[in-house]
Length: 321
Image 1: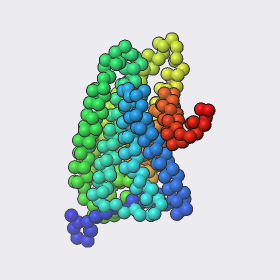
Image 2 (image 1 turned 120 degrees about the horizontal axis):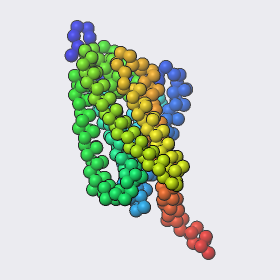
Image 3 (image 1 turned 30 degrees about the vertical axis):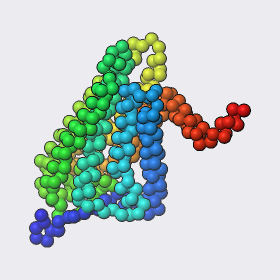
């Protein structure tokens, strides 16, 4: 509660990229809208194909389908507000809505890191333990892993809401970011945030580093297996390299965002790095994990051919004559 002449903050102003002129902001809003729509459509297509085609109903594509759904949720959590800020200039957000956005951002981010660990382990078993793969990665285990990850991440990240509820805001209400990240919120607070920041940083870094180590361990084992392969080595290396590029963007951006003390955080730099995490990475994932896969492309072509035949049955009859 504010004291004296201090006013209790009831809403924040997300500054976003307010330093840019209006035309450039409008142009960026169109670019980000195109990227967002492509991200949603690409991931939704993957979810649809995994659900309807029996050829894709195996553990690897089950996890990829979950990753696609997660990417839609994760990018929507921040991108929609970013588009509103850039296109209309409506920058206000209530304190409660800000806290909810921050909670979902970190919970979904945590879920993504855990899912990447599971996917890397799945690839390790498929490549290095092919004879035991079917016996280990059963449908029941796959569902259990995904459900446990969702529940654990959202339950664990409830601590973030508890930490935010301890903060008081009684000065400036301008957040130098396009979403409610923890760095600008801690810097805006008129509470003593040193202990809270340390707790938050330790827990976030623990999740980041633990998931990074587990994921890299799986890929190191995969690389050793590939080196012992007599054939198809080039294809396996190409697949791993694209996956590792995706992981470098995800983990690299997160480590850059959340491995510095609050007083050393550059919010201007954070905004640019956060775009990699919230816009570029979800946009690239459908292409890296699915649309470069020959089976997924084949299933997509079959689905388009089937849909075309259903919509234009006469053209099919004519071509058959």
